[in-house]
Image (cartoon, rainbow, N blue to C red; front, side, top):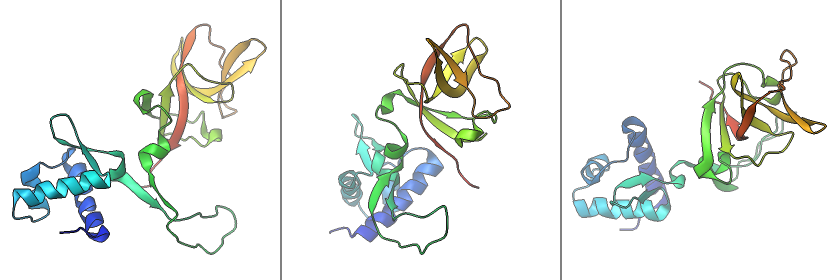
Amino acid sequence: MKETSDLLESRKAKLISFYRKNRRLPNITELMALFKLSSRSSAFYMTERFVEAGFVEKDTSGKLVPSAGLYALPLVGHIRAGFAAPAEEELADTVTIGDYLIGSNPNASYLLQVEGDSMEGAGILSGDMVIFERTHQVQPGQIVVALTEDGYTLKYLRKRGRGFYLEAANDRYPDIFPKEGEIIGRVTSTFRTYG
């Protein structure tokens, strides 16, 4: 029995729905019920199709876990943010959101929710999510997560002479010249959702 891509995508949507509701992937018995399959062998076959498609993978115990392809979305073209132009929809590629947002080192990447408006000039608003990569390989001009004597902060790293300082992207906030501290990492991406 060969799965059509439409049927596979439909089943992927059910799999994502199950995962969102239960915060885990279904076991074989739950797969049977979810897809109205009559036998365990059909459910095992379905798991192999999901693995081949890159939606899931199996951990060392054989349990299904999500893979990057589970949340891959089709990139259907470009849209102007300036003057309006006719939109042409074409399938340009498939982009996995995690691969797009997370930098080159996913094992050193973390998520933070922004509080405050000191970086609004950089397009980072209160409530946004930022992904930062824990690294000491940072350059002036990058947005960094820094630990100062006053706590953690999100700012531009700037250099003046031989010294470094932290700069907000909002004129209402003064530059920070920490007496002690550490650069924890650099921001690789930011995103927000619209309710």
